[in-house]
Length: 379
Ligand SMILES: *Cc1c(COP(=O)(O)O)cnc(C)c1O
Image: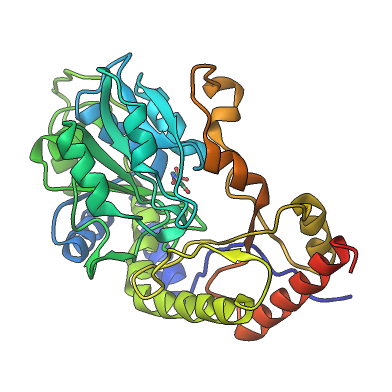
């Protein structure tokens, strides 16, 4: 069959992004400058509070953790079923990620389970907005308040999503986004931190530029300061004008992206409703800008074989994610059993979702899925 491969996820780049990048290249100032400042302003308008851009989403999480004074030995509650970036950001800051279980309906952190894992070293919770849905944010914040925990939202999947009609990022303690190539909007690479906490904002403005005090203000006006002070560990984790210029045009296309993802997801849901697979039931499609489209297979359907079969039909699929508590670096013998995670992770498969898919593609994907599941069940 000569069908073009249907990719699991991809960026969507228009001439506007290309023009923007060329303009920056023509200026021959490629580092952090006016474009980053402009992108931060537009993001701040969108979130109705300050946003700071950094080199990627992992760094956004890591610098957010460092900015609230988390120290070696401190613990942060996080669901095991997330991209390893959430865990690496925690351990990079010296803290210990404590693997928690998920709710079966939304695949977001189970607060009842998290409660059992609290110790006197627990300093924060990192809810992951899996596939774009924030889960029950009210419950999460109530829990955090009760136990005096900071909340660092891993909203890498959730740019464009809402919670009770408000944009994710516009509410809550500290919210971190990713602008990686396949996220809801992209810069190529990039990330941002959104918060109302001025201490966090000021610290990250320095830490992203090697800890050099007030360096961000100099960069915005293209100046360089030769006499400076540093009082904390910093990183070369700022964003460049090239990446910000891509983000600026992507942000303008947000509504267009959102509508398309919504239409595709609704069509998937419609076509899959009668099937034996389980959908992530708790996603409110009106509020969620879906980043990925995972489904839960019936017990006994071999997802690795299914993935191979679909690939032969020109459909790329994915597994989001391999639980982090099973990785050598994060294995924890004391971790109590993660019942739902263990029960679900090997039944998850993610179907293609990105801007350039058509409703016809979705029909083709669902038809192939039905045929291959039946073949695997020997029907
Ligand atoms: C993509 C992602 C990140 C990290 O973002 P990068 O920009 O790739 O560093 C963090 N958490 C989750 C859940 C992600 O999917």
